[in-house]
Image 1 (cartoon, rainbow, N blue to C red):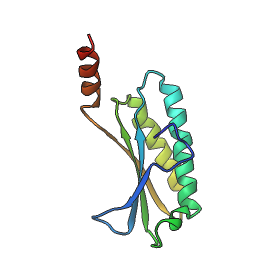
Image 2 (image 1 turned 30 degrees about the vertical axis):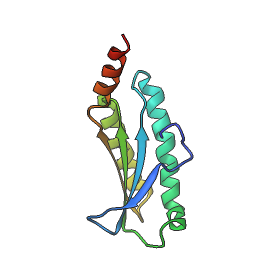
Image 3 (image 1 turned 135 degrees about the vertical axis):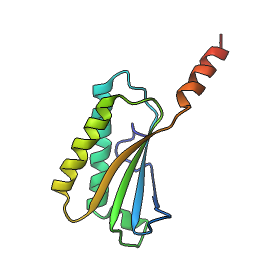
Image 4 (image 1 turned 180 degrees about the vertical axis):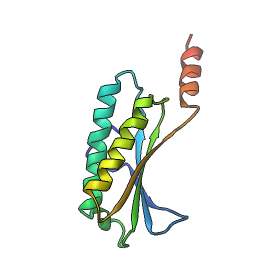
Length: 124
């Protein structure tokens, strides 16, 4: 979970591209404090980058990977600022980490908000 900034939520080998390691961040937080949310995300991402650049993934996988993809699964509709944040973050990554291919993306898990609203309405 995104609040556990020192922990990698999940990792696996990409089924379609076996030379790519997928790292997942589970973001269950709402976006009511956008600035604080992005700071938390940046801290988590920085720890993931350290995990990759320090080769800590080799404790789990004895393979060498050509690329790394960090996928942030967000439960609540993200603000436009997330797109800007990730574009800048990926641009800085390309400059700083030249010897490893790392990409950060997010996916919005549609339906989570609807489920929560439905549960709240059923309590009334």
